[in-house]
Image (cartoon, rainbow, N blue to C red; front, side, top):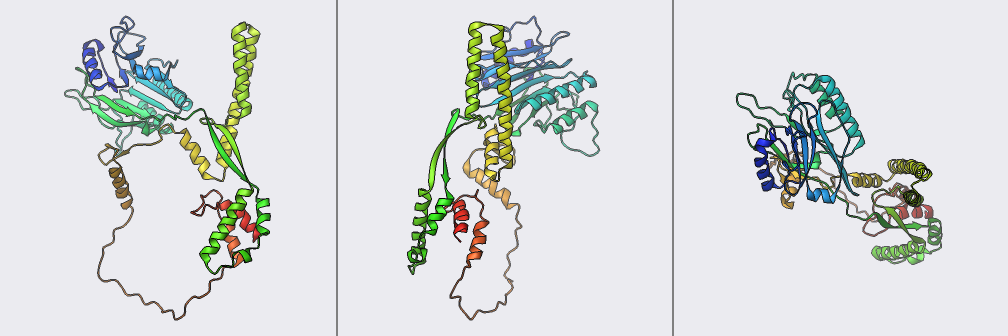
Length: 460
């Protein structure tokens, strides 16, 4: 939930009632009018932890974030030391072993200068480059921006900086309706929600203001996927000796073996013998890999253990030489891990198997199952409705032709002879088998394309 609260002391009772009713996990507030003289006990909410950034100069102002105790106990919370001159901001990193994202709450006053905006968007650009998952909730006080495209629209310099920041950083701005209503004034969109991934939030709702505030309350559902697998996974890999397999295939008298008049019987015999030969020349090997970081090898794991041993030795001795040894080895380990990651990603990018690339991309995604919305923007969960939405969407790509009774008659030549014999030249079969992709899945017979490619071509 995100809101522009205004005078906190006058509306805190209304905010407490709203939180009690909706029970949000995360609550972000801009323009709180907090100051250093107000203690946390005055603005505390039951079952919530308060993080605040007060206005440095002048009275009141500031931003704050309430995190439920459930979030605090489940994740590691780290406020980031990011200061933007003349802009009230608060950045919090929320992470665990499976995921990491950054929440930022920003209030930009209407009197902010263009030079301050340049510094603001430069800092936010660096933040985007350093973190994959970013959620920015802000009151930018830029009512002149037109989020719906219109003709002959020329934004001012500050608005141009904001739009360039969103476009160049490949971010998404979700708010497309006015968020501030005041009597005798045109409604304006001041409160924005900017995300690195549009699927991080769903069901954006524009609620009624808190107390006498003139800003609406924005609420949405946070969608994050945690990988519940362990740190390591065990894979079974099969290695086939195709040289030995081809030798065994060539020593079989296939003409005698496949002498049945039934094609189906010959196929069953051929398949059984081929499967037996493949199993005979295949060895199985168990490989243990890191679930989240597959580039971590056994050598790197040993280096990690040594790093921990050096740190433990320093804690016992508290000597400068012990700390220097740990610091130097830690830097060396960081270089090794980064190099291993780059080498692994290079192998994935250069792999001829596209499934390896897609698998790596899926593992790096935060949102694994994006929710589907209907034409009204409402998220649907019913399987039947989802199926119909996909069917209607794909049906729009096809032309519906009118059905008439005036179907033209086609004059086709009649065939007076029957096809009795079918001949498949060995050279043609070899060409077809050599073009099989080894990355495709086997058919119902269970024979892999690699076996057909390497063994059959060598035999022919």
